[in-house]
Image (tube, rainbow, N blue to C red; front, side):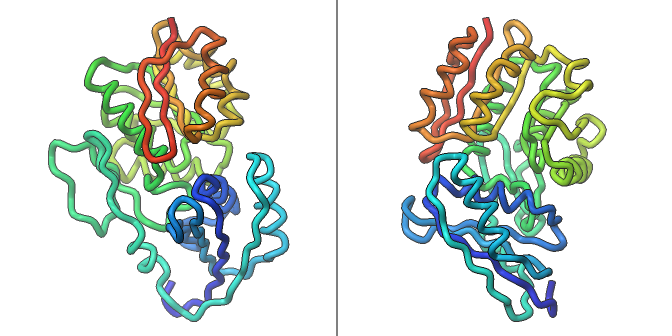
Length: 296
């Protein structure tokens, strides 16, 4: 984006609200060529900054209303955002400074500017500037560790990834097991990104990505029941989806759930325990938790 005038939207929130802000910015419909999202620590967990840089003018008032609505739905306080016109600069290059490789179990999530991974790693290539996740968040690391642990102990034949975003977890399952993976996301742009990422990682022929609200899609019903379902979203939609996710899971199947803080863990688990799910393992990473649940 060198020599292009850009606009930066900046907001400061507690660390716990960063996924909500990133998710909202990710729904703006901007693709990798026109938007870069960066999150960074300012003062411990108390204050983080989230920037999105776009190459078209944006309405601060419109973004503020939408963002504060999304925050309110998750019980977070309203925030102020600023929109600043920037001098010409290569913002993709700038974002590389914040985009570091992620190691989780045998998985290695990296950008094309990073060193090639060792041969004994499951490599997932995702470049900076991705509006739907580059694997930097603790919830992704927790899910990857859970998938790696499951891959060490058993075989998965029919997995589903709900809320796939950039497709990291779907690609992880395709690399861990010789199976065909079904993935879904509510955002059509995220679906396009996931399809491109799967192709670039050499697993496009084994991942089917579709646009769906929750599990409401004919292809999901046809492929059910699943022996593994991953869902890295947020606490509230996970609770709302508890009945559908457990119903779509085969007897003896496994759920990998993430996207919630430690203080939200009990509420999320309760929604699934009441439906016969039992806790197999938990992966805490920072203030976030990934749960692995089994169906009797």
